[in-house]
Amino acid sequence: MSAPRRPPVPARKGRRLPALLIVLGLALSALGALIPALPPADLSPGARALASGTPPGGSAAAVNLTVNLTDLPSFDPHSLNAPAGAVVHFTFANVGAYPHTFTLSDTPNVVLAANLTPARLAGFFAANGSFVNVSVAPATTEFVNFSVPSGVAGDSFEFVSLVAYQFQAGMYGFFNVSGAPTGPGITSSLSTTDTFRFVPSDLGVAPTGYPATIDVLVTNDGALPHTFTLDSASNNTLSPGSFTQYFAAHPPKVNVNIPASAGASAWANFTVSAPGIYEFICEVPGHFANGMYGFLYVGVAPPANATAPSTALVQAGVLLGAGSLLGVGVVLAAAAAYTGRFPRSPSPPTH
Image (tube, rainbow, N blue to C red; front, side, top):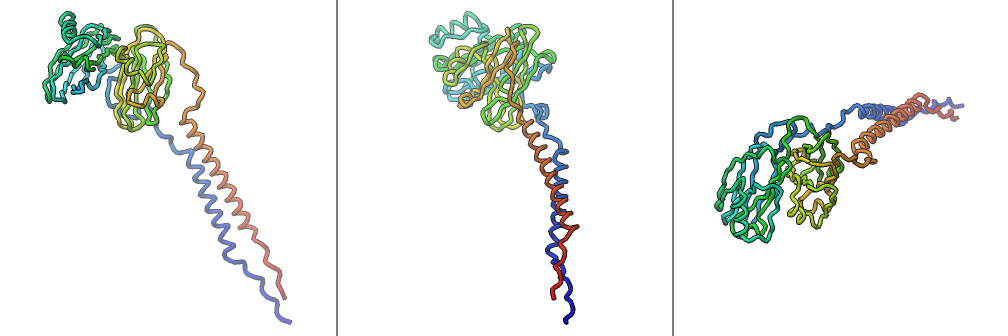
């Protein structure tokens, strides 16, 4: 009779699996516990650098405005903004080959008829006067300081070129005067995105009296340039196909350029004289038509926002993912411990 054989030794390969499962389970558990502890990204507007404008409660003593005079002929930009009582430091750069003037009417809220002859246009300014009247030769720059009267908050003043037929060809614009921010006032904020949206698209403020000064901080969350352009008329709906012609006859209450830099901000300071719903848009070509508009509810309750903010959805997803990883890690660790602690019985000896 032959001697009984030793029972077979369990293969080393079978002993590696429990160890690997334990390591993987512990790693997933640690990752799942770590994720909720990570601090959320700071998405508050205050975390971004301000690029331009006058903050509420800040000094409105000086405003720097640069205007390019072109041979189109046109002014760039065609809409200017400053608070009442401010000192405006104008820089006029003639970037063309023809002379131009910058002539700012001192008659508030008058839109000059586009069919005025050069003689009648000059006669209007001779009879009514102007705040600023400067001639700028080709390829030169002129500097002018202008003190905005303190009693014209909420008014708009047209500026033109008096060189014959330049106004008639489209060389005009509007200087809009907002209320001077003198305290914390009424403030709000929103962001612009490269998906052609204002976030949020509905703003609500509740002034205690009128006229009311409102200061809106607009922050660029993308890399494209945008504008914050607010209709001067309440309860009016703008059209992407005709807003340019509309603003030519009805100057916007405020038109602020938002720098094309992620995180850059600009203040839009303006005055409203009565409650109502005011539409704001982005004037960059194509942006309004693609959905970049919103509404400012002044003394009117804005509609309820039924959609949860995107940051809440992201945070919920992070927590759910962390919990799932933690659960999977615990299950794997338990399975590994079980299989490692109770190995299969060796096969019975064979004779």
